[in-house]
Image 1 (cartoon, rainbow, N blue to C red):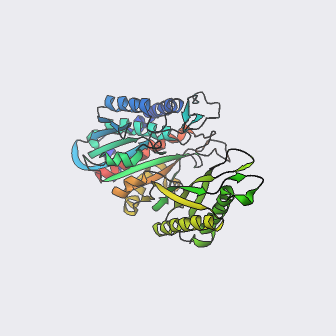
Image 2: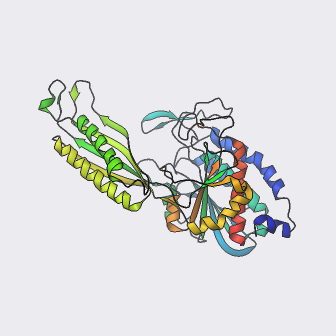
Length: 416
């Protein structure tokens, strides 16, 4: 039986009115967070706004978790399981480029570079949606059998260098305990998905993400006499070229996708000096553990061998950013009817895995979890603005479906 069936049995048929009433609040919250974005582990004002709202609803509220995280606890009128709903709250070092009335004009310095700060991925929407869900559920807690844990998580985009943060630190500080969480759910607004639709993928949905750093050592010399030195820039170019052959010629891509991308190269100070060293920074994305092990092994061997072949030296270091976002098959099967109940049978679509990463995956390593996409494509667009770009944009009319989806999931999971 769905939650709406339960509501009708108990005579509380005003839920749809509650959704209508909360929608304007969700949009207002989203615009407030959008205009006042904060970077990872620095979401102080954002956390205060969230905590004040949860406290006003009468929830048990904990703050300062994983630096700036907020957790609200809503206990139903009878005992039962515990469900967790998670929203990420951090913004990105991106300078927003649009004419919105609530456009971010915040500026800061990030890793030595002056930049704007913007919610260029949609975390402001996730936060507002979960605040709306908390309001709806708190008004209907007499129908809740069990406990709802609202997790507002900082630093999903990754903590600053030298700091801990994100879901790893939330878990380390006990967010899945007291009470112990039985299952966790998350969502992500997508600018490329039509409003009203929900997309999902059972099993491996998003990739494990590794950050790699390659240090190349050569021999400095005058640019006019390259034969007297060892050129680390040339070696870097050969390494980059070689790494791509691991994907194109050694990886079983009919099994799962994999990607190697070098995003930053640093070397040299002057046009006529061949420098002594170079640094390459990039990312590896994998969806299969065996492929990940093989690719990392080959990247190490190829990096060292290519450098040696050209008279230099090179080493590679990996840093894990996310695990595979793995949607528990049983949980997906159990909760799909809930999503179809609110979105419609034809609006809940299964998709293929993607090579983006999400630190929600670390929760899923501990307990069953289900992460899905929510449509937010702007109206009248054929090429919607991409996430993590200055032009990112969403249609706010899609937010209320996120509120409905989390609400339906909560009641169906706890009461069935």
